[in-house]
Image (cartoon, rainbow, N blue to C red; front, side, top):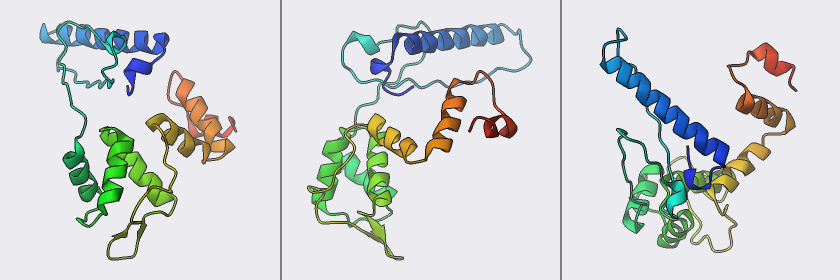
Length: 178
């Protein structure tokens, strides 16, 4: 769950219920009720914007990850593009826009490639000297929504059906959704 701090109350309740049910299942497994120990990892990401994003769950591991700083952002992008030569202004602009969020940083980089602002010439990536005149998504949500909206109406309809399905849908069922 990304941006847990901004989640609606039903989503927050679902996440808490899922984590608690998983905890109960693991406790039963530890008592020998099952032949093997089930494994499940649930990641809940939130920003430290007050208590709304807090989860008080007993017995759960918590990892606090700090946002990327400028140097970590530079290293991440250099590795993502497999090259050292990325203009400093581009690195600073992307670091500022992503706010230290690695997932959003990757989404911004992908956005630049998909829009043709960053291109590959067969030997390496070519970057503009600056991004000051290039429009970037303001948030991860905006970037993902733009990507989904670009898919077209049939694909969007299929995604909507998959998002609300209580069980996996067959290809046959999905073909009748569009």
